[in-house]
Image: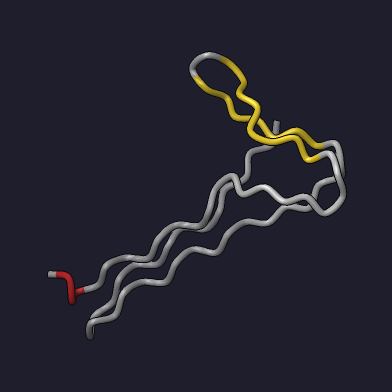
Length: 71
């Protein structure tokens, strides 16, 4: 099993700046790919990509930090 992670968000900065959001991870897979998640009760089907061009958002990149303006 291969595990992939989207990028973390960036830290908040000084001068009233917030941090950068993390970039979403995009994987190209062949038609017929099944996306599942391992939960407490076993595998859970998230999506069945059966046609070319289908897309599924499973996890997005992290949110950026709040920066010093929030404090």
